[in-house]
Image 1 (cartoon, one colour):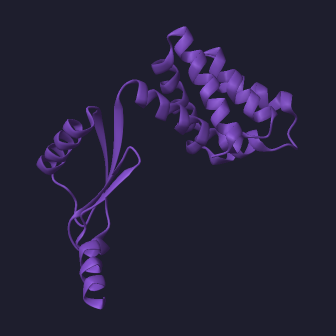
Image 2 (cartoon, rainbow, N blue to C red):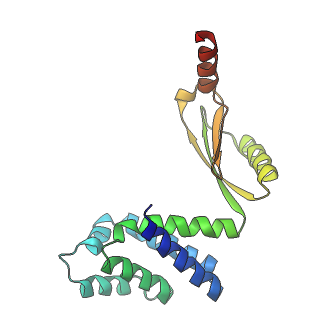
Image 3 (tube, rainbow, N blue to C red):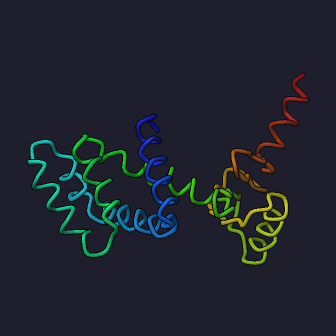
Length: 176
């Protein structure tokens, strides 16, 4: 993420907090991101300097004016004008990170050797919520190369309880 990207997100977040719209604007950013992902050609068109800025701005208005706050539309237009549409995802991610912090929500990225069952996810979530004091949202994925166990990354910290990691540690001890 560039410094400029962070500045856009911080400014938008400050304005959203000031107006009491932080959660609503977060949802609006998610909708814009979904629209950009749903139609990559449209996203590319908004980034194309060969298309006149006024036409690109008209497309943004047409797509979002009926359903999004003017401030979010202005952000998209500004990114378009400055040739930074490719950074929208990073702006959205930073904004949502600040919003989650305000709402005391932490995302835990969990990579396990096998899919976690519903009961395992519930227990893991409860442990993480107790340790962090925040509400936790699990983002689970599977990596069979772990052989067993899991890796959990949350709030800038990582706990590697994978069998692959433990076997590597044993190997290092034996090699020493």
